[in-house]
Image (cartoon, rainbow over all chains, first blue to last red; front, side, top):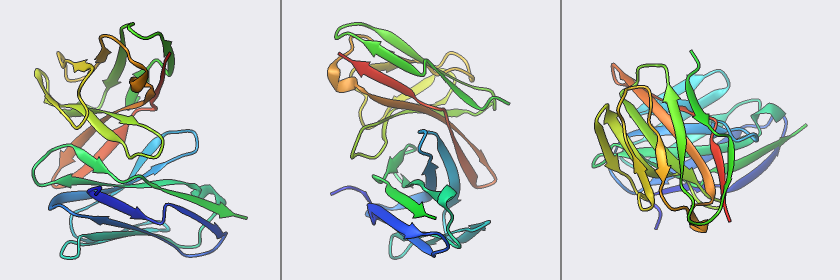
Length: 109
Length: 114
C-alpha cells in the first residue's frame, strides 16, 4: 500500500466549478506539501502544511492531522488550473518527501 | 535568481554509457535532492544532501552516485546506464525559515536509455 494516496486520479470539470482533491497518508508526518505540475513538466510548490488551513488566491489547502488527511480546493476554477496536482509528505522518520501519484485535473471552458 | 537549474534538458544514452546530470541552485539552500518520475508512479527520492560534504540515500539509490562539494551544486552520476533508468529526473532544493519550508524544483531532465 502506498504511503500517500490521492483521489481522484483524474478529474474533468467545467470552468467555474469548485474543485476538491484529496490526499490520505498512513505515516506520521512533520509536513505535507501540495505541488502543481504544469503540462510542460515544471513543478511548483503551492503549500506546505503542518496543521490547519492555508489560502492563496483561489487555492485553499486543509489538513487534519488526526485523520491523516488533506484536501486541496480550487474555487472558481479556470482552464489555466489544468495541471497535475501532487501531494507529498515528509515523514517523522526521514527528511525526504514521499509523493502521491498525482491528480490530473482538466478544466474545460 | 535563476533558482534551480538542470542540464541537459534531454539526453539519449546507450546501455552501459555513463553520464552526469547537473543541478545547481543560487539560493544558498542547504538541502538538495534528486527525484525520478516514471509514468503511473509518484516522484521517488534517489539521493539527498543536507549540506556540502553530506549525502544520503533515498528510496531508489541503486545505479546512481552523488556528491556535494559545494552548497550550489549537486550532480547525479549514472556510472553504467540501464534501460530501467529511462525517466524524468528532477532536482530540488529547499529552505527552512521559521517553520516554513518551500521546495524549489528544477525544470527536469528527460533521459532515454536504449
